[in-house]
Image (tube, rainbow, N blue to C red; front, side, top):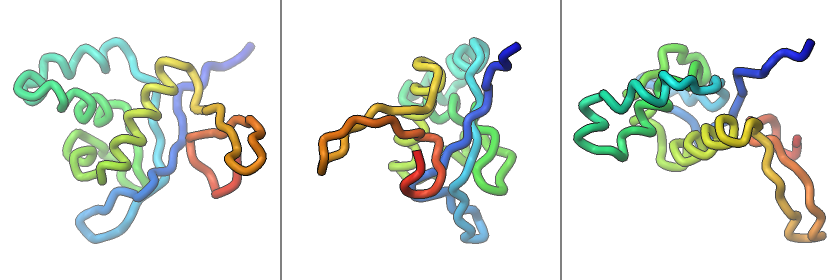
Length: 125
């Protein structure tokens, strides 16, 4: 019997910098539930500014960034813009498309191949 994968590791492009100045890059995002997508719609911050929806939503589904396990909207707010954009795309890929792989083309040889966007070391796919 096949088990459904519900958690996906990732590595932030820049990383979350905590209050002590430590940089955290590796993290985990879980699949979103219907509740995860509905609850933020009742949040006053989202009602005032609909663009805040992704911050609240990511605060619900990102379960860990480095050693930070209490991930919430405040942590997501403190990410660099490039890391926020990465997580928004990562969320879309694992929830809408069902995986964290992307089809890419090598600019040198024009060969097509798949890469895993969930992180790992440079050159791994």
